[in-house]
Image (cartoon, rainbow, N blue to C red; front, side, top):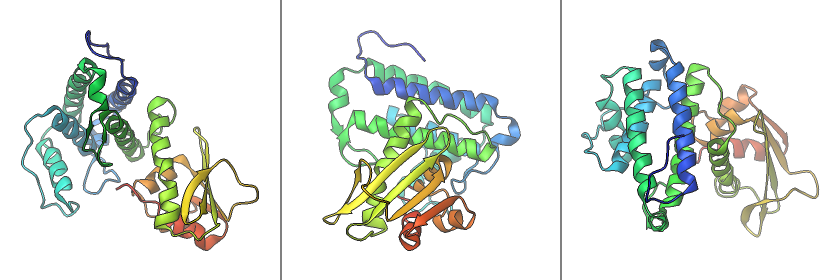
Length: 276
């Protein structure tokens, strides 16, 4: 953890960001030259590109001059994607360790800036990937995004880890909080149906969702067996939720176990990609 700045405020989310960025730095230290060039599950991006994207985001938030957007890549589908690709393209001439050094430099600047702000700054409402929210909530989204990209690197290089701790818990909490939307809106689960997500691995979770009066919501357990139960490893869960792998392929590979109403279960799994 990097130290605090005199005159600022102690905002807990900054420490969680620090923990996440420190984990990414340590992961980068372990990678060899070949691993930096491995393809990730983010279309068109290598492991190095994933880190370059994170560098670009933090530099943008600091107000650094942005490179020209790149819209010609086949995986770029909108203006945000073109801006992201601009940062990635600008750093493609650098080796992985060089991008890692820039990541440490820019996140160090970001932490210094955040720790110098008064508490009121974190209450200010402004734009974010999830709409107009207080800046504190925006930084919670940043933790989730960075943790997911860390996991992208871990999947690509077969280096699993960092499934526990404040950053991992926050990220998983945010991903699981979207499951009522997935069940009710995307999978169109019928009135009275219930879905249990049983996540296995080192950070086990059980999430119960029921549809009542046309709305899906998390509940504290069911009085009887759920309509359908989905059992999967945490890695499978976040990769489905973030659009890294398709639901049909995950089911075909036996990565998701569906119990009970198979039709509803398959619809939910196929609808899980709410964040791409």
